[in-house]
Amino acid sequence: GYDKKIRYFNINKTPHLYKGILYPEDTTCGFIGFVTTLSWVQTSDLQARWFIKYIVGKIKKPTKKEIEIHLKKEKDYFKERNIKDYHDFGYRSYIYCDKLARDIKAQKKTKPYHFGYWLKTYDHDEWAY
Image 1 (cartoon, rainbow, N blue to C red):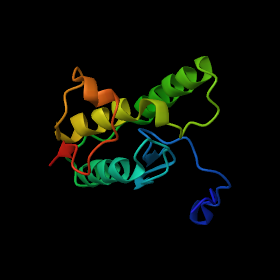
Image 2 (spheres, one colour):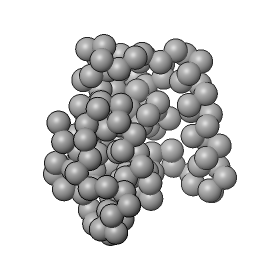
Image 3 (cartoon, helix red, strand yellow):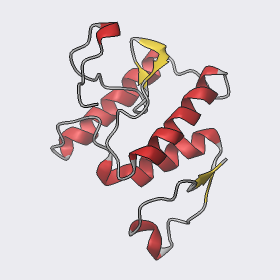
Image 4 (cartoon, rainbow, N blue to C red):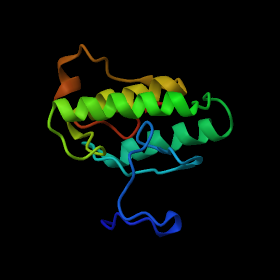
């Protein structure tokens, strides 16, 4: 639920995760559903699909340096916008999900230039298999 402690890793709050999924200290560990978005079920589905493809080797494993650069860019992005929680993707959830979908080569049903794209919550299968 709402407890952000991760006892297995002796962590008292959710760490800053690579792509909102990978634990930087152990990239064999993925956290699904730890980001805040407009539609967490669909986002969690995409995260799970992304992580499975990552684990089986269909997504290139990032180097330690790539992870550091990604997290630094994200930290700077959040700082510029005065956003305190690295897991709050609510205002950019479509962008986040589109990036995950692109990584796993999932097709999007609604095009971003369509007016309705920005005014609706996503469908259960917005990013097709």
